[in-house]
Image (cartoon, rainbow, N blue to C red; front, side):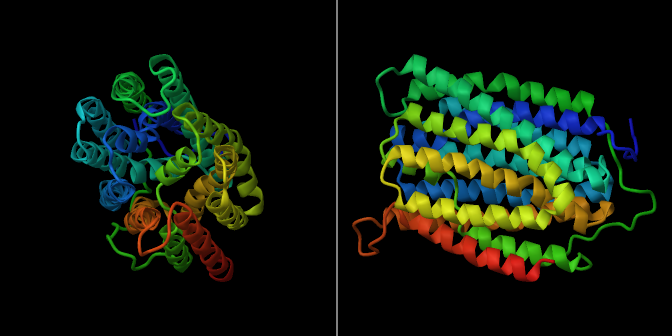
Length: 402
C-alpha cells in the first residue's frame, strides 16, 4: 500500500515500524558485534592489525553497497523492499558464526552481514525521511536511534547473562559461550524482518521528479562540504573494537567489558530522542559540533587512562557523543537534499564514511601493534590519533558548513 507523507505533527506509522525493526535487529546484532573482537582475540588468537583489517573490510563493504542501493531506491522509487532484502540477508548470515574456526570464516560472515546492512540502510533512511515533515525530522531520527540503541542494550544484556551463566570464573571469552550467543541471536533477527515486511508502508518520491543520476553533480554544496569534513573525522574514528580491547588491556574482564557496553547503550538510548527534539529547535550544526568536540576529549582520555574503570566511564560518555551526532547527521542530510535524491545522498555519505573506515581501522591496528617495535607506539596511539583528527574536522566543520 502506497501513502504520501503526513502533513501534521503526528508521526507516521513508518517511524514506529522502523524503530521496532531497528530495535530487534540490534538485539540480535549487538549480542554478537561486541564479542566478535573478543572471539577473534581470545579464542582464535588473531592480532590487532588483522582485527582492524576485518572490521575495515566489513564496514567498507557495507558502505560501497549503500551507494548502489540508495541510488536504486531513488531510480525505482521503492524504499521498503530493498530494506527488507537487506535485513533478510543479514539474518541469513548470522547462524554461520556458530561454525567459525578461523578468522577467514569470520571475515566471510561479516562481509555477508555487512552487504545486508549496505542494502538496507540508505533506502531505510530515505523512507524514514520521506515519512516525516522537516520540522519533525529530528525527533523521527532520534526515536529511531533510541529504538536501535535500546535494542543494543537488550542484546548486550542477554549476551552478558549468557556469559555469566556459562563461563563462571573465566576472564576470557570461550568458544562454547560464543556459540550459545550466536544461537540466541537468531530469533530477534527473524522477527525484525517480518515486522518490516508486514508493517511498513511504501513512501515514494513525488510523481514527476527528475530521475536521479549516480553522481555528486547537482548535490547541494553544503552536503558536499559536510561529506568532505566527515571523511576527515572518520579517518580518526576507528572501529569501536579497539575501545573494547583497550578496556580488556586495562584490566576489564569479559563481564566488565559487557557492563561497559551496557552503560554506553543505556546513555545513548536515553538521550537520542531528547537530543533529536533539541536539534529541531536549535539546529543540527550545533549538535554535531558539540559531539565531535566531546569525541576528541573522550579519545584523549582513552589514550591516557590507567585503569579499566576509567575506560568504562569514558565509554559511557561516548554514548553522549553518539546521541548528539548520529540522528542529527542523518537529519541534516535530509535538510540539504530533496526527497527524490535522498537515497543516493545517504548512499554517497555512507560509502564515503565506510571507505574511510578501512584505512582508519588499519591505521589504528598498526599503531596499537607498534608497541615494542621500531614504530615505538602502542595501545594509546590510536586514541591520540583519533583525538587529533576530531579537532581538525571540528574546526573545518565550524568554518565551512553553514
